[in-house]
Image (cartoon, rainbow, N blue to C red; front, side, top):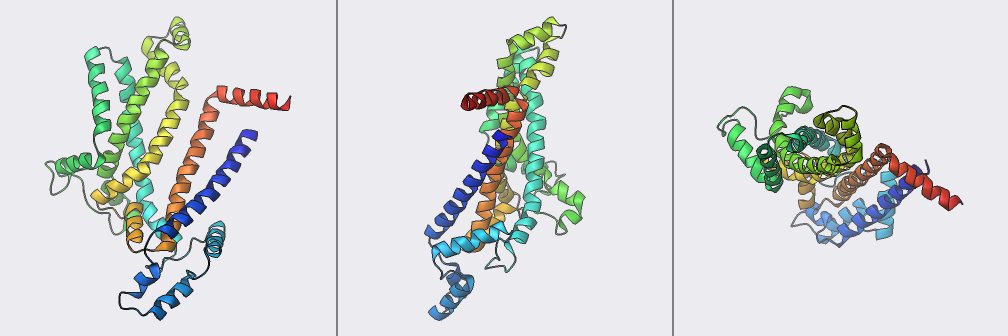
Length: 327
């Protein structure tokens, strides 16, 4: 509990610092949302009226206090361009991006962990060498290039085996779940294969480090085969490290997926953020950037807590340090 409380306090401090950083960075950037909304032929009086209505004529501390107070009450403001609340705008676009990230992570884990294990446990040295090469090459392939190859192979209307849609998202959204899910298959495979190559390399490295450990040797002495000992004991002992890698991979996918969304013409968070930045929609952009960065921090916190729960040595080390401080 002491460890959890300490981590939560630091998480709150990091969120406060993050909000200050996002607010200050956007005030440094050139451009004025009031001028964009007023149009090119607007008079200075109209621009000033829009700035007053949006609260942009107030001091920076007052603007920051208003924005932070709104965030604490769940109010992220109203988009100056679309007129929609920022929360509803983020929610509608996140309904595409978040399922895509989850599908991509499932692909990455489903490819990376089994192939990483096979790269160590395969009986043929040639097979192990081929799998190791695949992991290196897969991690070096840019997601955009891999996505183009998948479109050329499987894209409906343009691919050699045109069985999957390669552009857009159904107008009905998740009210047509089958069509929505099918439209995310190619983007998820594109992101998942690249991320899976990294998980594959790390899984292979973890199992190689466990191969000569006393724990695996003890399991084999108790009657397990080498394969059973590596999978049942070595892989389980590497679970904490693999959770950390999966968490980092999930975080990296947020930015990777936004690039892939543009290739497959998906109206996700990436398209929303690019559109709002281009329109100088300051109110929307600062809340969107804050939420994305806060998601990174939250993911890091969850991975840290899971790593602490999976690895008993961390708990023992924390108790030992706490006992010394108390003494």
